[in-house]
Length: 131
Length: 126
Image (cartoon, rainbow over the protein chains, first blue to last red):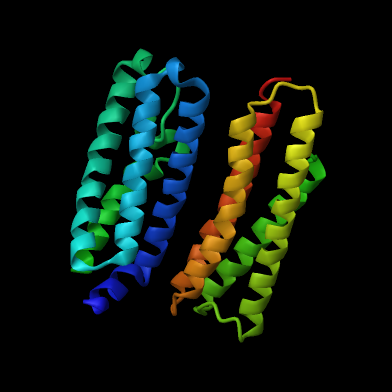
């Protein structure tokens, strides 16, 4: 059991979790500031920012814990993340007026070097590779 | 913002990232018993002290300068920049392979990005 956890957070997993943690911090900090200072400017975008922050926190913690249950929760949260970045990315390009201010997932994470679009794929691959 | 401090911090962060990248290339995990690990963490500790200085200067300038700065956002970036390196340091140290210094490369490269964002927020409303 703890061997599985060790495998999940070692090697490439060590980097993966670090990048997840950075995004957890970035998305959460950003959404706290946005919600606190000008929520009414773009409520949908800011609520999605907050959701992204929560998803990244859950994924980070569960990947770092790495036992059977938390790996399952991590898988679900990473799937939510994948759907989120694809949906928000598409909508933000198709109907830009819905997103007057950027979120982590706008334009498929362009503002963050498209890392938000690649990260869920890497996460799912890593969970598969360490099964 | 003090431009000189921001520039120096950027270069120190890049130097630490390069040093960590060297450790990746020569396949060394981070070991504080070895000079190469100790020097890396010494440099990162120095960087952290500098970032702490930037926080203090940033808050003082925000309070005294009469320009319109998005205060909470500015403070958010100042605080975030303080959290990254200690977390990356602990996380990288627990790894017994070359992926430890990879984490330090990423952690150190995050700092210049945050400094650029800080300057953008500071210069947004002149």
